[in-house]
Length: 147
Ligand SMILES: [Zn+2]
Image (tube, rainbow, N blue to C red; front, side, top):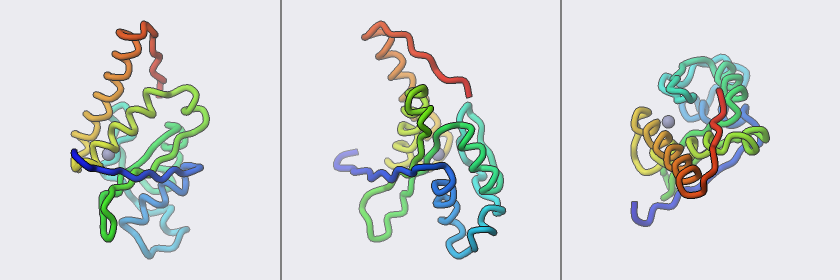
């Protein structure tokens, strides 16, 4: 991926992130109706779980998970994909592997892999590499968070 630049947009909470995701498919629908709209036929929510649900349900799943993101690869007028994400304060402190999985997964999308199956593999490889580095090179046991 020579010369690939990825932009990032960080959100302060889960709701605006999920709403922004849903907006791509439903640009004109009213905010209150958007919450009841079904999205995410193929969303990776961790632990190999993919889920479809309303925006409202997805917000609560994302809050429980503590982090989530998506990659906007539609580059109309832009050159760079954008990774949109939210990471809770708790996950910032206690879920480094989860954060690495998120960025590994979304980077997979950013470099052109549209399928969830491939992006999930990118996330898993990223976490595996981190855990291996910490344990093999630095001798530190890494705890992965139960979700
Ligand atoms: Zn994905």
